[in-house]
Length: 246
Ligand code: FPP
Image 1 (cartoon, helix red, strand yellow):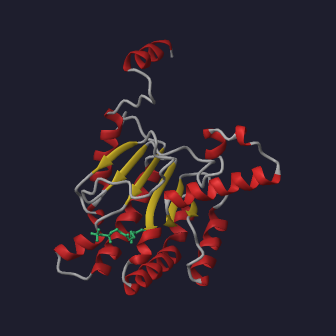
Image 2 (cartoon, rainbow, N blue to C red):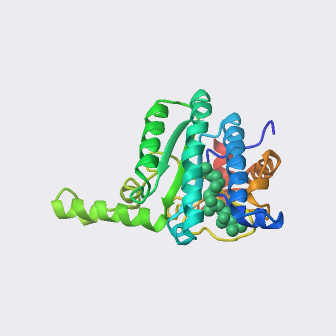
């Protein structure tokens, strides 16, 4: 791993907990428990490799449609997971941030989230973003709403709305966009995750189910990333030329 080119920001859709459990004749919740352990490992491994930002898609706006029992189990898992891991995160200088619409969370979970965010807010190591009740379309809508209000209030002219201005109202505006997007379990979809921010990300899909995504699998994804050439619309000739003059 010595000289591979590392992404600054990795965004992951952790998919396949249910299928992992089914393959073992276990209930879906056992898959989610194993998923939490895989998340714990990926956080540690990314922090150790000095990745600046890691975003984990833990619960989408659409996940509320799952059976009530599974939803409440997941909420409980987030709460107990936070209680258990906050010490480890803080000791490792990790800053934890939650993104998404919290209005449907229990008061207890909201309180815990606030507490952990406050505790870790001055940490200078990796930023860990947990996306819960998050949807990329929701994020784009809330940014558009903010800009519309500013236009209504007369503090912004519509001609001043540029991609940069728009991006500044999105949820991750102070962080670099993901360089590498990973989705496990063989699904080839972005599923409403960070729609705006993934515009130029390298996409990496693997058939591995999330609970099996270990250090070795992370390494494969990083190797894949380091072998890609990101062009941002330039031709490869232009990029070579720029590299010669760098
Ligand atoms: C995806 O598998 C998993 C979820 C939607 C649940 C949330 C993720 C975890 C519990 C991992 C831990 C994360 C944190 C940050 C605490 P699925 O249920 O969609 O699996 P399936 O597609 O095989 O049914």
